Length: 219
Ligand code: LUB
Image 1 (spheres, rainbow, N blue to C red):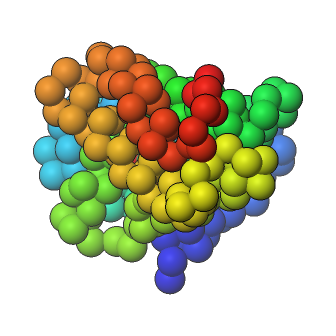
Image 2: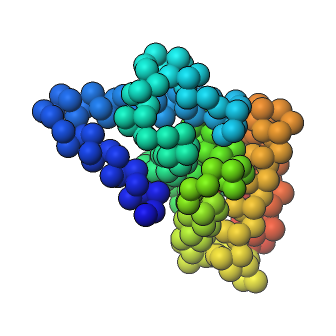
């Protein structure tokens, strides 16, 4: 059973029981647990995180965590799933700003860098992805979603004439996802992501000119 089916099975079993107020309370408790677990996973990693500490941080019982998620492995996998579910709304908001195709990419990645700096759920997911072999559950394959999304965005930039002829949207997407993953990982390891926006700015200033047609000004 895929993680998302497992997660849906847990959620639907809880959410479908009882009146709407109970379902809303179940949803809120689930979010509270995910956020508390993300703080613990981001700080201590999968193995060293204890559900007792997650429960204490969330201000609920350990039983409530078992009720919503079953075990620590399922909780970790749900944190990763929750992370990936965050991006579509951020992408949609950025696409709706009326920017051109190149501005949209640059603006989106700057917003993503900010989220990586500030959001413990994203930070926890990035760490759990690195520790994925210790979790023992299927997790979303990293990088695939972002590479597909960036390819789509660079196809628009290619159509608008912003890309060098020798740079395909697929190439641009692979380079940009690799560069972004690298800067967020190094910034996290060395500086707790405090300097991620400065590192992103260097990628923007040095990598984009290598992707864009001569004379295109990178926003
Ligand atoms: C992104 C990470 C960290 C890729 O899975 C992913 O796509 C990612 C690991 O989970 O950075 C760059 C946007």
